[in-house]
Figure 1 (cartoon, rainbow, N blue to C red):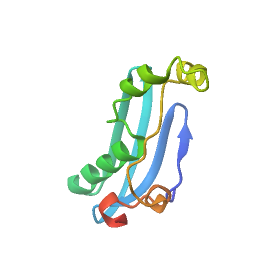
Figure 2: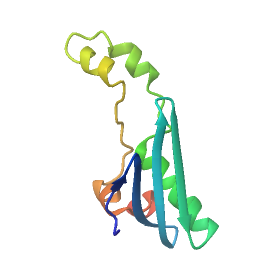
Figure 3: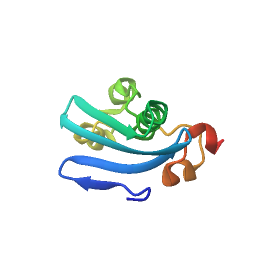
Length: 108
């Protein structure tokens, strides 16, 4: 598993290198309103850095209510917003940070 997302059942898994070492991160969504994230590494510091990276990569801290409320009845995109009420708003960072699994500060 080298910086490639794998899906095992309902769990996404990936190897990332952040905080000075490798870590395995996992994400699952057991319910529509719940996301479970985990990170495993040799040190707690690397695991914490990997978990911060995963939260950034998946955008779980983004509050999309304002976007959904503003555009759910839009004639062009409203049906899509109602069907899948998510919208990815990526932070200003190079795309290679996402592909390579590097940390956001290292990518800047």
